[in-house]
Image (cartoon, rainbow, N blue to C red; front, side, top):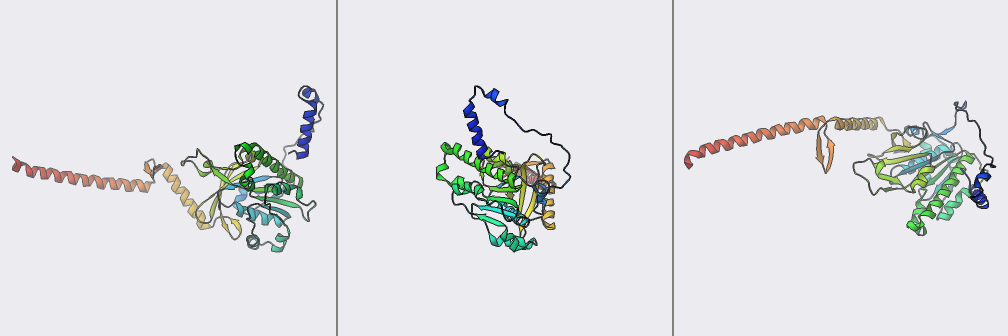
Length: 350
């Protein structure tokens, strides 16, 4: 990823040469090229882990350095809790830069997670640099304000959330300002990408969502909700994870986009550890719900329920059949009574 200085140098290079002699000039440019072996690395690459089943979709066992991760979903879907958990785990290994855009940073919650996970609270506190930007200019300046060197290796950069200030700025609202806004967002994300590669750290940012205007009630939530920022945000991240609510403190994370590991879903719960695996009872309940759903999909009978069609389970089919039999028997009794009454009234009318 090119830095801003390199981009400006490229623009000046193109302006100086123009389009007429561009082909000849390009043949003079030296481009580095190496033969990259495809063998597995001998040393294991260090990863940032949550210690939960969520690590399966966070890099296939944990996040590698240099990655950008987008967490998006509606309010209370678990974005900040995942960020707090990653912050505690990263601060135990090195420095964390926490950009608190929406005033979600909670020292009490971080200390609770640290104690529950067996970490040293004092060490965690000393390894977090907190930035609280009040406007877009301050947020854009943060990548250039991070001290270098730091007391310890930089392990994680957190932005919670990425586009809240951009969406709230009156000067950037409306389609007439869309191009300028997207350019600023693109440059900002490029700065974070450059820092991730420079310090071999991970950048995790939360994002808000909007409902698609053409959303269908028959499609899953991840099809009907999109993260704000459009393709500018979607293309630059390495992992895009959609979060949604379930029952109680259970949340579901779906890996929506990644070029290395297969797309998948994982359920987790929110507790004193930040995020955690489901308890045995919760796993059993999730298993029953899945079995129930599979039965409904294979039952083969369709009914209308609140304007929506769904398939009935075997138990519901048996109950409906029994009810139909009872209704049929009742109709036969009524018809027989009517016939008998008609026969009894016949001679009198004659």
